Length: 388
Image (cartoon, rainbow, N blue to C red; front, side, top):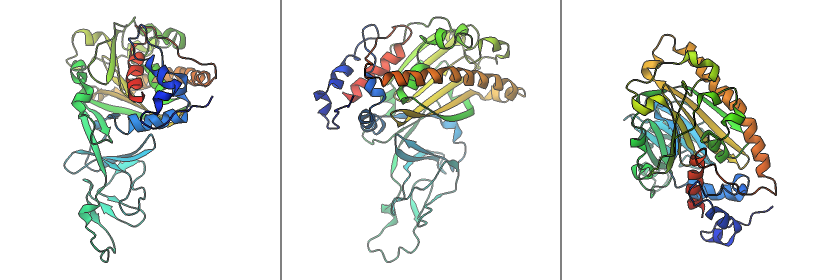
């Protein structure tokens, strides 16, 4: 099966994919799932890079991991190389990871730096992106350092979540997220810190990984003895005004521990009241970051495409700073980490099996269970609007 997708702005309308995507633009009760080719076709991934990753706000986890000025990470988001760092004014900055001299990659991995120096010809930059060092450039006519600072992009901190955007013309983050902050106001998000961060690759499309985190349907079948017993049937999905979907569900104990580990539960977050103290809110911030806000912890997943068949996933486990300060925290937190690892060990084979099935020439669009998969249906609508 070969896709005939054109990257021209109106090329999609001449393909069957356009019609298939239109079937996603409906409430969960009547919508169809994304076309199978959206999970394996390289040309669809090229469209995603163009229409989503280059011009939408992207969630990259928690801001708290950049504790000091000079803390940095490098990212390759859908093939787009970036540097994220905290500058001397305590601001988060996002730069293209490319020297303004002749394009060399500037930094690798993560760490701490006082400035940025190109490993090729030693051009150097301050933490705010200014070009401050240019060896032997005295004879270059008309050359001004001020004209060659690092290419910079937008960054925003919302509730301790870090968002970046590569399009300077994109809508501002508050308009993009709509009522996101109000929806999650019951949780002390700004007081939560990352206690463990884990990166790994999965042999499935990036969207499929995020989908499985956002649906209750698979719980009794994929997790029958690990976590299914914790979860009661979820409430009706929330009506949101931003680029995200959210659904709350009551739990028997904490959703962050296995059924058999509930005796290890940490106390609820300070000031958590009402409905928020009874369960877990699952939210998907489109396109690539999802999280669960529980009574005692927050667990987050980011997914980034490596190619149509593989994704890079980042898992962050967060607790309230008062909880992390407990003398027994590390011992008890190990039980939480075990729960997340055990659930992943059950999810990943299911995802990789699904991916093989989606690549079948006989795979077609399916339907959603409205109350068990509403977040997935909401993403399909959002995605279809961006690619159509």
